Length: 307
Length: 311
View (cartoon, chains in turn purple, brown):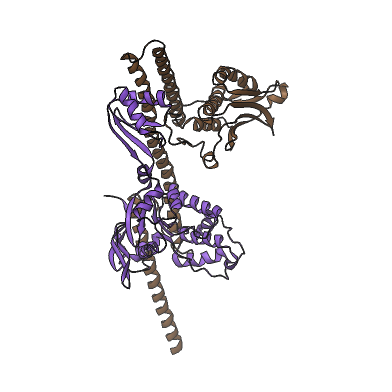
């Protein structure tokens, strides 16, 4: 049926009294970038840790490739690459040596896997610089190299751009995009930054206080949230003529004989409707659709802004 | 004697244990490989077989991965093209429908007698212009499909580019004057020979000029032809709104439109066609822009040796 690579069913994790993750049902499609968006402490990291078997769910189930994670860890986990918090690298070894250790422990798909992974994140292969001498940005790149070294089908990245400078952020964004577009990887990424997710994700899940508030495709959300006026009218051909002649407007899209969208939020709908009626057209609907993505998120998370 | 016996028994035991362990490990690896291959067989080209670099089965696993990976790459290119074609079909129906419906709006108004006299003539003129716009659009589409099905046969020949460029620009001058766009043409008198397809070259330059007229809102356009590092450069510069850096990177990709809200303004294919044609003629095309100040496109061809012989 639906090609979900990750599916959670009523996933719940309680710490002490409250639920830090509360009945979450996430659906990640194959070959897509899924952005998990929420404020700090919303429960993002806990969800990702449960998917990697690092934390046990209190209730609910996780399915990866259609199989329950529980009991199949040894088969499933090698197919995932992950970046959660900082991985443990030896400070007194170089980047290549560190990756060699992981290659021997986990296995790699090819003889040049380490070199390829380092090249992918633009770090030098067999460089003599020690890990302890790396800058924060280079450490983060190395962590990504480790996550992709075994060419996994699924990547789970928790706040991968935390602490990076703008250039580093743009680089990592393009790495992730390339992994998805060129190699067909599935990527689950978490962030508390709306603009970051909206630049990268195909699909998006919004989580607040452990509850998944909304899930859907970003294109769909953008379409819902873009500002436009939808008209239903007796004759779109005449409407188009009137828009051009009387309003000098060309930002419209005709959908069929009776429906069109007008992409100019500043224009007065009243004036247009009366011009249509003066010209003998029947206007059965004129509906302004619009809120920006930010407004949408602010509203559904109950008024508090997500940065 | 006893010691030797014991020793050889110990060695034999060790060997048996060792080979048993090895066999078990290899068996497990083979079963893992079969699992992975079954997955690949069912269409998952991203599955890899993992092996430690020093394992017995490692070279086999790496070789299989290589095969899977190279097939997956080919498939991925194919899937991306398919995706783009799908988007083209959707945007095509939108891009044709909006101007066509508008055109019908004018003709219907004329037919129903909504307007009379000179206004009626204006309506018919507008409809005629829109019909021509649609025809241009269809021609662009036709070029696009021909280019992408490799039916566009280019015949490159050593051609004198200065005169060719001058002739092409002469046709554009009435258009510039009509739109009140100032023009500045600087083409030296001496000949510049280069290997290109004249039709392809004309199409590229026409596409670029059309692009400036449709999108830049420029009131000045400059065309210059000059030699640089053994190449002939044809530079088309305008003083319009320019192109943002993030758009500039994608400008030659198919269906890329800087202003996504606007419909019926071009197919999003013109620049991509220009790029592909230049590629087929072994030339190069470069775009640069200072947003707010204008943009410039430069076509670069290697100069043919005839340039130096015949001068």
